[in-house]
Length: 312
Image (cartoon, rainbow, N blue to C red; front, side):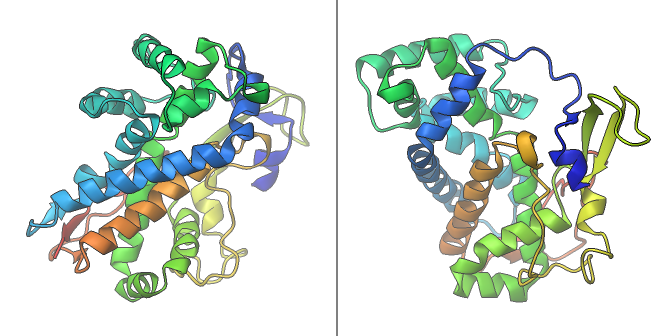
């Protein structure tokens, strides 16, 4: 499995042409990584507390529809400093998908350009201002590169992150003793997240294409990497169906590996950890609602469709 994700002879199928400024975008993101992470975390924390607070007076709520599906995109809007009233519009772009190089949906480029112009004239401490000055030596990047960087941020706030968050919360709510441990020892949150990605990755299958023959696999063949099966391989993991945040080595395949490791891995982790902190702070009595527990659904992408809870 790992060979299919790390061997340079395996590439994503039909990757298409590399967009202009792609290399500059990658280098720019690396040069401001800490500032990007800080802005994203601030956006997630603010947004998660707002969403959790809306549930505080409720007797029952659906965390998938009212928290997980909105948190990633709304947090990206807050981090980028975009208008709050545009959240639903940006959320729709995120949900329909943006590629890992920040490929833009129709309308997103035109939407971002005026905001970029305002940040160039009056920079602030939001993420879009950071991206505008992310060129070599702090020199400005071209508008096209900035829109692509912003698209990369928004691409990491899409359906896969929302699904991963739903799986994460479902695993902890299904194991209240482990949830209590995370509540008492927040430093365990990262381990709880990694174990959820092993047991219930949001993407069950990742496709790769061979650039040349690899053993019995011919050139140009499409290979299905079964991440969900790999995470529950009994030859690799003891009692693989069990959710155990103390598992010594849960692996790290859920966001790919090697040259094609998903750049959304860090934003997804920040979203999950800050989202859980907000829920436990605002809703200390959070628990599963009585009744049947909806099971995860989906073949390629898999997560709970609903997550009924009692907020208090």
